[in-house]
Length: 357
Figure 1 (tube, rainbow, N blue to C red):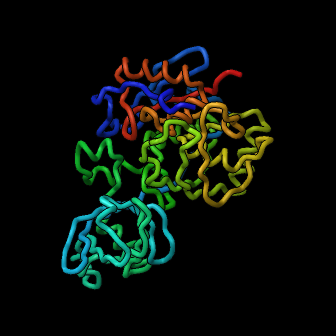
Figure 2 (cartoon, rainbow, N blue to C red):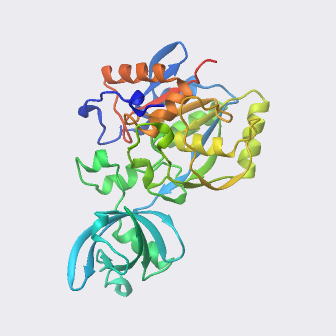
Figure 3 (cartoon, one colour):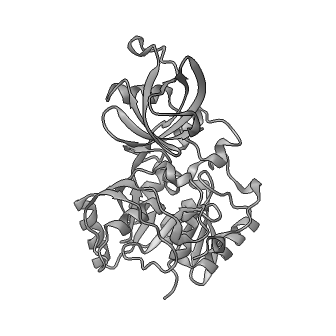
């Protein structure tokens, strides 16, 4: 399909730079097959049914953005990298900016770790390889010291549409993390989950709505624009995820009993669809997925989707268009823009019913 079919105009003032407070006070647009309904996230228990099951992504964002100085032949240049895939105890793949300043053999020093004497000289790495904007870095430290060093000098990798308008600060260390985040490894938050509070989770429990966890470590590729003119020419960056046998069994049982599987976020949905067979049975899964969902895809594992409002021409807007229908989503987004909804990672949410078939 043509990528321009997924374009729409979004005023810049609709981009949220901070989350709603409290989190569950964010607005929620219920997009049913025949109606749009303006609610708030706190209403979620009233929009679901006893016996439904929420599926949340428990990945935890690491401070994966590192700023440093590249040294070569006595000359220094500033570079930034965003770690996105661990290759071993001392190696990471990363997206570099500007990548043209880096070449194999270059040395980079990230930050200064003056609080710990054994790391006081900074976090150093060697560029082992470069492929366009991606580099492979071999750090002088290895885990667990490497993880401690990254936590000390790294920054939360805010999306470009936020980072371009304000600097990351201490509040982001809390705000850009779900309340149930547990498994470290993401470089971007599963943003639909940012709306949940302990109080909302308790109300969902009391309403008889189950909750199960999967893990998909969201990669830096989630921020990359679609440069192709046709969706057939775009390739997703692989991301690592896992669905346990216990979660798979519980979700299959939910379906057998007539309950619905409600994916919290596109990351949960993509992982569940990667784990599902042609018959809709969800199986345990551990590995990488690069599934790219566009209109025409037949959903097998997910009945409802809770998700934020996404970028024009993005793979995520293509996914929600596949789930709920392109025309219906364009109409829903027009309604949200006119109604003052806040967009993107710190913005408001939508709850989508699938396109009627």
